Amino acid sequence: MRNFILGILKWKLRLLARLTVAKYKPAIVGVSGNVGKTSTKDAIKTVLNASRLTRGSEKNFNNELGLPLVVLGDWPHTEGFFFWPKVILSSLRQLVVRNRRYPEMLVLEYGVDRPNDMDYLLAIVRPGVGVMTAIGEIPVHVEFFAGKEALAREKAKLVNVLPATGFAILNADDEAVLAMKTQTRAHVITFGFDELADMRITNFEEYFANGEGGVNFKLNYGGSFIPVKLKSVLGRSQAYASAAAAVVGLTFGMNLVKVAEALQKYMPPAGRMRLIKGERNTAIIDDTYNASPLATQSALATLKRLEAKRKIAVLGDMLEVGKYTAEAHELVGREAAKIAEILITVGMRAKFIAEAAEKAGLNRKAIFSFDNVGEAGRALEEKMRPGDLVLIKGSQGVRMEKIVEDVMAEPERAGELLTRQTPVWLKKTGLYD
Image (cartoon, rainbow, N blue to C red; front, top):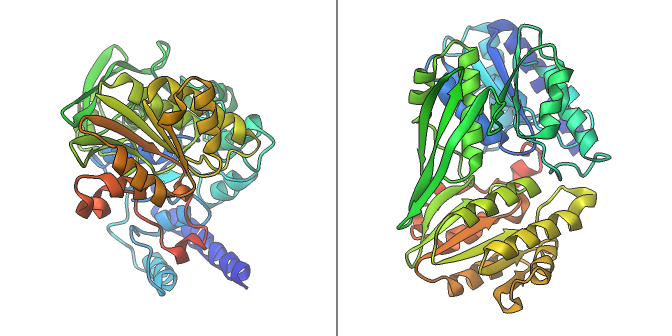
């Protein structure tokens, strides 16, 4: 019965979304990839909002329920028994009576978990601009695919369908993404740190002192450059998101100066390399929203680059990597052993991290493994000392943000600063990535 009701709901949302796009004809920017979709979507929305009314979900609504929901309205809160009837009635109303506040532009995430997911989403709405973030050597969401190549082919469908007048914006630093330039009719613009990238990131630096930090870098395009400064966030992922957003802005007629002004207002979503003050004069890198092998390695690289009295890595299970589970966790464990003085793992899969770290030379007495976040949070709180820098990361299903709440200096701000817990009833709909 539940599947039947969900099927009817998906059909209604799909039809209403298609009719809404046909009526209002917004410009569509589609974002996909395995890492950084939501941050990139938010950066693009921030840039485009500087010149045109733009909508992009406050959350990662990126599947057969979430994507049409963004098309139909601005629904940041999806709670309450009458939520879906309210969405449907509101959508019907704006089809009959023109909504003068309907956005000129939509920035949509296209999430892929299984074969043919992209086909379904593209049947709802096709973008004119497609942005591909990164795939990675061991990608997340590969669980139901034959391998990385099959997943990359599914993702590539986003750029396959772009019109000849459209733009494919590709990560120049990711081999699988860059290969997609031969699979589209659209104009290709690349971004990244590679010297051949059209929108090149240079002079990247992270700073961290006295619990405060951020990133500085330059975006270079066509002989010109703009400086970008982002506070209270860390990691190269923010530079990638900003670079992709800058390219999108240029494709819609903005200049680099206007883009730079807009990026000053960009704040990455909660749980994405956010720097949060911890108790006892410590600092936390909150990267708890989700975890893939590539993103976890990137977060560890940030931890390595920063100066601190002591570095602690708290790493949870990486889900949805299928046959690569042991390999992916062992790879992360070897990296963590080179960087962290203390390693805490959470979950059954993450025990592969602990075992690999010990084999790589990290003292066994500095490694602690737990089955749940409650135990891990209490252990971390006992071990933290003034001056520590703590990285906390794991897949969404592990709920690592609960550990952050246990050790943050201002737990009363958890609702504002941390990834929000998804209501149980909403999880059952499959709305979330």
